[in-house]
Amino acid sequence: MYSDRKIAFEKLLTAGTIAVIFAVWFTATGFGWVDPKLVPPPRSVWSAFLDIAQNGYRNHTLFQHIGASLGRLLTAFLLAAAAAVPLGLASGFHSGIRAALEPVVEFYRPLPPLAYYTILVLWLGIEDQSKVALLFLACFAPIYVSCVSAVLKINEDYLNCAYAAGASRWQVFVHVVFPACLPDVLTGLRTALGVGYTTLVSAEMVAATSGLGWMVLDASRILRSDITFLGIILMGITGILMDRGLRLLERGLVPWKGKE
Image (cartoon, rainbow, N blue to C red):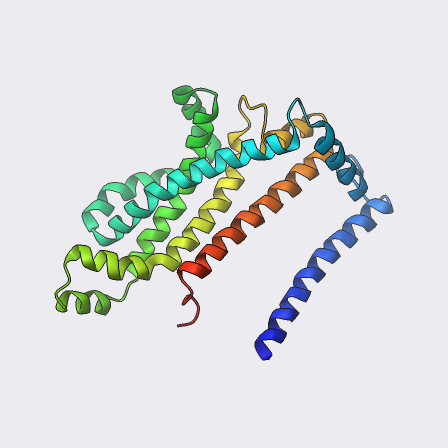
């Protein structure tokens, strides 16, 4: 009973926060407290949505813009997950692998994406390959770091018990290390998805003609703040939906998380 009331209260708080944000937005624009060129009223953003949904933007439909961005992001994210999860777990489990890979990851991880994007464009061209590569690098580091950290914090007693029971090194990795790391691995995936989405605008700055990030940048150049706000809102909504998908996956794979 107490848990149900707590969940209901938290949902009420969430709805209240959203309502307050919209109320402030309506009030500030309705009374003219802000320049509509900088902060458009909600009705202008809604009108822009209806117009782009019906007529498209710059020769592409709204769904084509959303699909282009999500296609680049999800391709890079899946490739990064496929590479970073095994490499991160192996690095945490074997110090030699960690010593070989960690300098490279730690070198590029703090670099701003635009710092090396020009190099990727020179190497891979201005098409989607360079954009996917940029997003891949943005997603790879947080997944790798979370996997390494997850392995290193495993209680050594678990490993010693498995070895004492006659398990091989591979069996220990598969049946002890991997299940113990799953919660942190999924958290790293969620973090990487967010980092990749924040890098999406940078990826679509060069020679792109479609995508939500490109649409936001193009609209800002012609002072169409209503389209800029619309693009940002759509990016936020799609980001929330993808994160919810990962959270549902997390509940299915690690139902014990938070219940120790």
